[in-house]
Image (cartoon, rainbow, N blue to C red; front, side):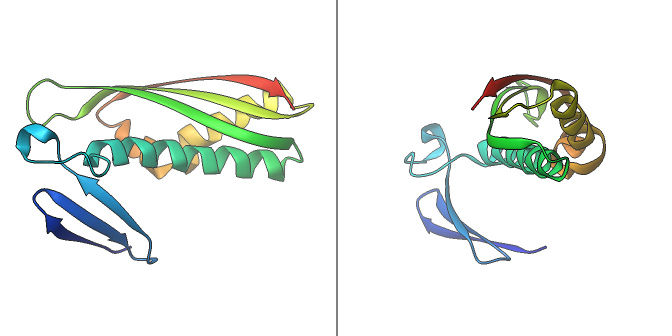
Length: 138
């Protein structure tokens, strides 16, 4: 896996993935940022949520569950002092589909959490990660 980060102006950067996708990253205003992009730690949090959401939807579809939507809402707490690592992350899944089985949704989330989601498994080394979910009928 590769990435390239390039300064654009001030404290604004363009981060390009090895697969050729780009995202604007900016620093907080107190260190010269202009709010033109996500902060790096926001990207870490979004990456963890995306990683797990992909797992959950993939597992549910392989289990022949008729999932039509999956939203992961995340909230993180960080240390006050440097390094300001995450200390706690709450992940709330809202899974929508037709006749979804609660046991299958819970299984998919647990498999992501314990086996497949590299991002959340890595973050769990420094942060407590809490998972919960709700199921909505499509």
